Amino acid sequence: MLPTLIVFGDRTANEVLEAARLAHSNSFGNIERLYFEEPSFTGVHLPKHIQSGVEVFFNIGVADVRVKLLIHARCLQAGWRPFTVVHPSAVISPSARLGQGAFVGPLAVLSTNAIVGDHCIVHLNSSVGHDATIGDYCAILPGARISGTVKIGDRVLIGSNAFVNAGVHIGNDCQVDALTYVCRDLQEGHILSVRANGPMKRIVRN
Amino acid sequence: MLPTLIVFGDRTANEVLEAARLAHSNSFGNIERLYFEEPSFTGVHLPKHIQSGVEVFFNIGVADVRVKLLIHARCLQAGWRPFTVVHPSAVISPSARLGQGAFVGPLAVLSTNAIVGDHCIVHLNSSVGHDATIGDYCAILPGARISGTVKIGDRVLIGSNAFVNAGVHIGNDCQVDALTYVCRDLQEGHILSVRANGPMKRIVRN
Amino acid sequence: MLPTLIVFGDRTANEVLEAARLAHSNSFGNIERLYFEEPSFTGVHLPKHIQSGVEVFFNIGVADVRVKLLIHARCLQAGWRPFTVVHPSAVISPSARLGQGAFVGPLAVLSTNAIVGDHCIVHLNSSVGHDATIGDYCAILPGARISGTVKIGDRVLIGSNAFVNAGVHIGNDCQVDALTYVCRDLQEGHILSVRANGPMKRIVRN
Image 1 (cartoon, chains in turn brown, red, blue):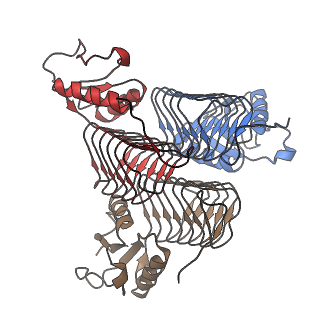
Image 2 (image 1 turned 60 degrees about the vertical axis):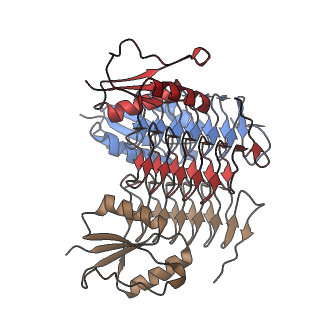
Image 3 (image 1 turned 135 degrees about the horizontal axis):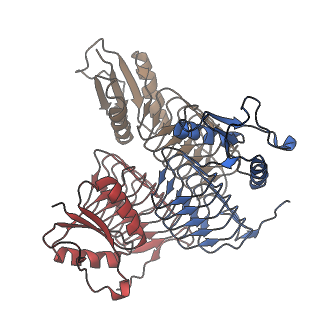
């Protein structure tokens, strides 16, 4: 029996779902989206119509890192395995490496020797330059340009049409706003926005 | 006899024309561009070599909304019908909806459940995010990023590499300059530019 | 015997190399990258394993214009010929013209009647609008938008996600920073940056 792929989330999850159906419909007996209302989210339960014994893969189509980590933990508890979805129109260099549970959207590019970690979203029309390294649970939003040899930590968000200059290092848990120019290293846990004066320490709710 | 497709305009019309020839050459007996000098534009006449009785479709490859509306009215008077041209390299989600007489350029993306109105131009390398809604006669210029759930009215222009944040509403007849960040709702008839301080009321010549 | 293609340089050269292998592997018996450490760069020597008598083509995958010109001169001395590499995912209008020894990266667009000179790099996800003209040895970096009818001289660099407005003229040896808006003509030898106030005269080391 072919395995099942479950895509978690709401709107972004629809984008992952469509890409999965375009690219991977031959690999799965069932590809479906599982929506949950966040306040009442108490765990992940296998939908009833999925037969017991079928192998289950998952992809988390959620931007919020806290929710993403929570779903991830529950999925692993259930014995499910992460699955990477790449839209058929994306261009992935043969020398690039892409982690597990990731999503690469339409017309995104991963250039030569780029490394993108687990559960990242590399969104539509964005690009990751040659020899750039991106950690886990990152989101590279539409049209963002990660230049060559950039290093980005975990749980980082790079906004739409933003630009990260060649060789720049960005620490864990940073957020770069849309259309923002990152010309210097950004220390862990900072926000950089074209609409503000310089980097701000990010306040993270636990 | 196969119908004829006429693309109105000058330079942008060449882009529409080429896309039409790449994508739709089997559907038409004749695909041609009809140039007109605007000052002497007094009506649309069927080119002589098009035989009477042939079905005629049209697409208006003109950025100027006033000229566009004028041509549109004349075409409808002539009994012609609008035709949507999509470059073969564009990525249109199966769940997106695209109006009549529109043009989608090379490598543009319409994401899941996006709705784009009649006679819009969604230009090369630009993107319309999931669940975004765009009215009629809009132009989304190259590299512009319309985020998810954005709502845009009629006759709106979004400049190249501009960014519209998720959920923002933009009223009718607005213009957003290139590289401009739209983070708040924009009232009808306003211009927003990265080169100015805040939105300006747009002066429209009648 | 099939000719050899040599791609000069380091990291960008890997991008050219991969594109050449994807697009042109049937045209060459051998496609390889030739690295050189710039300080010790004293000339171009045919790698030993390439047999004498084989026809050699070259592409220079180097951003630095000075180095590029030096390699170019040596290659011509050796009797080699420039070769243009286009990534298979790029969209080149049938009416566009592309010079010799150029590189067009993944998902870049050259629109109708665009003219791009010799040894230019038009990088990933960038676009050259209709009827735009670009000279020799230019680099259009990822996501940059050259609007319609723009004229750009030789040895010009346009940064990532930058924007050049329709009809603007940019002189030789200019550099436009990433995310920068070029709304007026830029005289020869100037730098324009979103991070500075107005154009600066560029200091060129000889």
